[in-house]
Length: 257
Image (cartoon, rainbow, N blue to C red; front, side, top):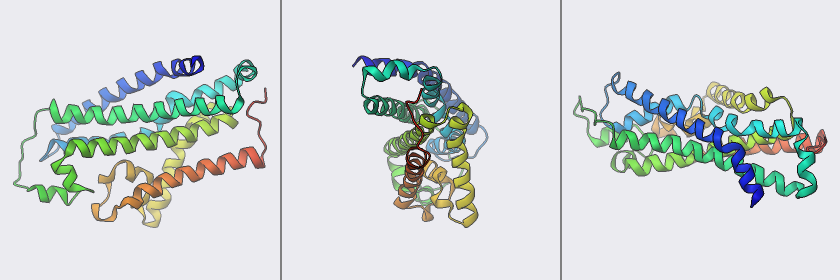
């Protein structure tokens, strides 16, 4: 229990700061959007704001937590920890706390902004007589989007939390084997860019990871459950490849001091 509390304390301050700053920026962006776009439902504010959030969500998921292991390895902190706890237990515990922290931060950022928009922001004026059906056919799971926006936002925010969990895991795996902080923090973001570039070039934008984060960026008819499955599997496969490469091929030692 002491170890859990200790690990939570390491990331708590950075996670709180990230959550507060990101929430404020997200709400400000949505407020600015409200004055610049012709909208029909407040929910659209959240969707457009999500486009901006999708540009930085990998950074939000990785930066606040993934630097810690790099510094612990550089500063020989592991030499202090190893004799006191199982190596595997320590690594698993640290991974779970870091990844769940990233997931929770992302969920809070996304869902809190939705609550502000639905219940605090003034309702937008409908400038054109569009029906609910007109709106729903433009969005994946559009009926849920129009009829039950809170549930839609909760589910998408939860999924965004899962993506943050996976990208945080990717950054954590890199931090186990690489001591260059810039590489550890930049690689997940670079991977997201490469994923979008390759699949976009091949004409499969619906399978880009960023599309599963923000489904409104492509036509609703090309999105399916496989968009989300493929995105998650892409990250998981990369994580497995990195683990195999560094631990079995290069035979890097995590606890080598």
